[in-house]
Structure formats: structure tokens, C-alpha cells
Length: 485
Ligand code: GLU
Ligand code: ZN
Image (cartoon, rainbow, N blue to C red; front, side, top):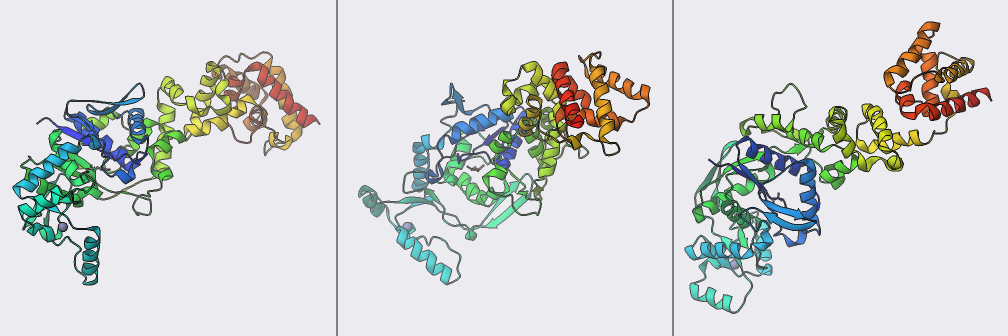
């Protein structure tokens, strides 16, 4: 079988971290089976549209490295599309949905409904008061052909509803097994709305079929829609795709993951300096782990290992601490030229520095970064020595006199040491400590504070390597002046 998966987001303005997982799993599954993967824009809910959302979505998918074979793309910043099954935006497919809905009405699997909003509201109220299931009462199912034609000709407002047959509906979910529900629980779902737009249910089934989708992999929140879809597939006579519903993503307290944008928008994580590599690795493990004994995987390893039968049924906890840890791992292990590219927007006031200087800062500071967003503040210290007090220069087991002596010795020593590599610097300073039988702290503490102006910073050899002889000497001299005055 030619596997084809899809990711059909509604363009609401940002990519939810849960949707990133859905998109990535669909990508992994397609790759694993040498299949294809498409992206489709589901914009039939006109009230939820956000300007520029599709463009932003395309860019975000590109940034995180989720490629697709068909769907909307940007060409010179303008929306276009690729693939033989377009249009890939539902609002450009209205005729297709209309034809399909009319076809169902003609064959008796769907029917026209002219009920007013007021009537439907009244019905719902009565049912609620009587503690009955709220459901359309099929008032318009009795209309005969002539009356329907007359009212359509008179341009009365109407919807088309799916006629849910008697009996029950069973489907198989690749993660959850067989699920059966009684059709009496299902409402006669509106397929075409009065505004000429299809509902999600009609559009998703028609498009998945016409676009050749074989596997529908999406979040658990959609599982309750499947019976309606199965009834639609049967009414159309379309072959049934395979379904797989991914576990919910939960907060640490096991509540459903917050919807607040700041906590769940992929774009916000990227803007804070989470690496695309770390984000996809992290979301991949929300509900699936290839080996169970480690956390860091390449995309290829995830492709090779991905298997729907190994996706968990139970909710996956979104652990921010783990994401932070993973991001740090990626910052330290990723190829340095790639890191240099990724970090470009994050230099802040240091952005004007020479590339060679930035490379050195990055080599030193990456050891302690959790996100790239922290870099601007860390880099500032290399540009300008922060203000600090003389007391900061004094190691806890020493005194000001001792600090002053070592800084003076260092000043002299700096005349002769080779600052071209961290190893040479370390060698020279350690020799000074060793030859004289000093303790590391007595020398390295004041040296480090003198160079950084901070109680906490990168190590003294690294700092000196980045700052170079001239700036290093200036800073040591500043420290001597502070202690001597
Ligand atoms: N448009 C739906 C969404 O916003 C797609 C649901 C599905 O995958 O069927 O997530
Ligand atoms: Zn009606």
C-alpha cells in the first residue's frame, strides 16, 4: 500500500505544541513507509480565521524541518501550492463540498433542513429541560421533493444534514483497538452550513478521500468525531482509511495542557531560543519512545523506530524541565556552524561583534546555556565590564591582600603567556599555581571575577581566551585599582 498521511491545521495564528507532535508523527510515519505527506489548510470556520496564519504556519514547519510533499507553500513570500491534489485550502474547494453534499441528499443519506435558528434553540431548550439528549428532531426529514425545490427556489436559508442510520458504528483505531458506539447517540450532523461552507466533518472526509489519504493520525480530541466520519465514508462508498488517535498532552498535574498561547505556541518557544532539533525530539517522546533507555534521538532514528502500535494510550506529561534539559543538550552537541546560524537573532547588544569573537563567546557560553535567549545577557559582559564591588574579588577562604597580590602577579604573567588557545592559558596559570604551591581558589577566583565582573560566570581561562590580552589586562588592572583604593 502507498502510505499517505496528512496534517490539516486550522489557521488560528500559531502552531500548538500538540499540533507539532501530530505533524511530526505524520511525517515520521510517511517517511518510515516511503509514503507521502500532505498539509491542508482547514479554514471553513470563518470566525476563527487569522490574517497571515497560513504563511506563519508554513514558515514554522520549515524551521522545525517538517517537510511535506503536497500542500501550501511560499514562493517569494507569496502563497502558492505544490502537489497534484489541490487546491489544498478548503475555502477554495467549496464547489466540491457542495456537489458531495447534494449527492448524498439525492441518494437519501442526507437531507435539506430549513429550520430557523429560533426553532432549533427552542428545541434544545425543551430537550434540556426534559433532561433529554439534545439532538435535531428530524422535522425536515418529512419534506417532500416539491416542497424542497420550492423553498430552494425561493432562496430560503438551509443546511444539509447527514441522516444517521439506525444501528451501531464500529471502527478500529491503531492505538486503541476497536471502538463501537450506538448510532442513537449521534446527532444528524450538519454537513453544509447556511453560508455555503461545509462543516469540518464533511470537508475532512471528502478531502481525505480525494487526496488519497490512507492513515489519519491526529489527537485524541478528534476520536468522538470518527463515527460520523465512518458513516460518511460508507454513505459515499469511499474505502475506509486507518485511524490512529494520539494520547492527550497533559500538564505536570495531569490536567489537560494549557491553551494559553505563551505556554504552547511553537513560535514562542523558537523565539525564546529553543532549538528546532530539541523541540521535535521533545515532542516525539510525548507518547512514544523508541528504545526506552535514552532521550536524544536523531530524526532518522525516530523514522526507523516509529510504529503506531508502540504509541501509548495514556496521556503524556509535558515536562518543561525535561525540555530545558534537552535544549541544553542540543546547544552543546549540535554542529557549531549550525549553532552559529541558529543563534544569529539572539546576540542582542553584542550583535555588532566580529564573527571570530562571536564564535569564541559561543564556544565558551554554550556550556551553560539553557536557551539561546539567554545569550544576549551573557554576551553583554564581554562588551562591557559590569560594575562590581571590590569584595566580590575576594575568595571566601582568602582576604583582599591575597587577592591583590595574585592579581598583580597575573598582570606580570600576562606579559609572557600565549593567549591563542584555552589550553595554553590554562597551562600557564596552573604552572604559576603549582610552582608556588598556591590553592586554585586563591588565584582563580579573583582572576575570574576581575575578568567577568560577576560572581558567577564562565571559567577564568575561557574568559581570558575570549577577551584577549589587551582587554584582559585592562580588566585585571581595574580590579587591582579597586582593591588598592
Ligand atoms: N482542522 C482540524 C484541526 O484543527 C483537523 C483535525 C483532523 O486532523 O481531522 O486540528
Ligand atoms: Zn429542519
